[in-house]
Amino acid sequence: MNELEKLLQEVLTKYPELNDYTISIKYSPMPDEHAKYSLGQNKTAEIEVDNALEKNYLLEKGAIAHELSHILKAKKLSRFGSWLVELEGILYDKSKRYNERDEIQTDAITISRGFGIHLLLLEFSKMVERTENNTKVYQKLQQKLHQTPQKVKRWLINSRYL
Ligand SMILES: [Zn+2]
Image: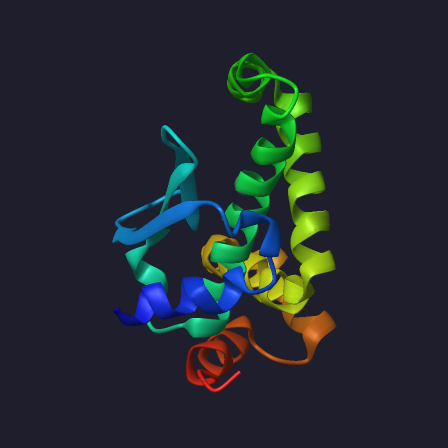
């Protein structure tokens, strides 16, 4: 078992409802997202994690927990018929409002399973990347945190023990 698979197993202990699922995990380069999931046949799923997160265990856990929350939502929905899961996929692609609501619900599950801090730091690390080239937002962030975003980012990368 590699390190990423071990992390998945650790996070999965907070998702006992997914015990009957076979979930595989791998790194992929992802410029726009932290991670994504896809559902397969017969209770299988695959999670891909942005390889830029490699060894940032705290952030990786947040990303894995978020994707597991999506899979859990899909599992609950599939009890009413697999067509509903497909319908949801279409809505997710076509409707911005549905997409946003779905992400909020997914994050709520992630937080309820104890990965709120991981999620917060994951979002923050993405925000830092986006604001590094946007001086106004960057200065505001700096004033509020009394820390430079880079400093916080470095802390995040170094806090592998968390
Ligand atoms: Zn999501």
